[in-house]
Image (tube, rainbow, N blue to C red):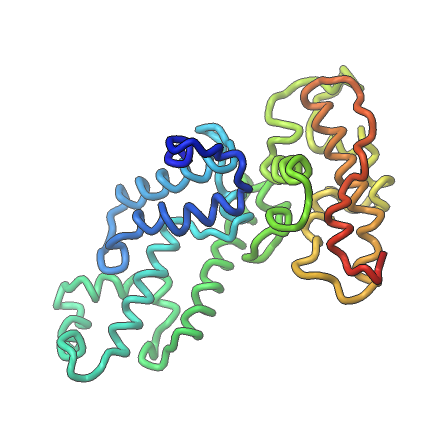
Length: 306
């Protein structure tokens, strides 16, 4: 993002998804150099994680202390440690499928032994490659990709069950690109959706609610203050109705009116609620209702369902 600014481009003109793709193609490719064939130390792993976290915070506008767990999940990005294991597993698989007359193939019987102390043997001890055993020779790229996805899913499940992962537990439970990053919507609508996901709305500061000065403006209070259950037509048993609905945004254009029709009521309500919450957080006067909230998303739905 700093490089874009240096050549006169406004980084805020790019969506978070597009900026993340720039990062994957340009920046992360440099961070990954040599990771596939080297056993990295814990110190180097931490430096790589810190470098990636700095880039993601720069893209999404987070502070130096903001967590990136949710950002990684929204963008479907692995941690640098996970990415290292993936690259190493791809290298090991490639070494097992080389032609018989290559030098590495001739050396495999020796470097795969524990007493060889080879780099190949050290790489094979990664937790991801351990899931590829006991018959790695029968692996192919498709099978390895499935194992990689399951490895990341297991890590996500473990992270979601942690006490310190409240925001992450409110996001989608599977490894996937969150639709709020690519579904048609205005820049303001996308911004407030992302900020809600990241916990920046209503914010981490313990400040009283402008409508209820004796109560702190938290997510739980915002649900009651803005009457989200009633406005979103959700039962009271759902603890986080707004996050619940965001998790059910479509990953593709709906094919039936049964799955698409509820969004014509709920999506404008979601945009209006987040719009009002943004004003509450900044302690501004009650805003006038936004003009045609969520209209771009509604126009994206099949015309026969309007």
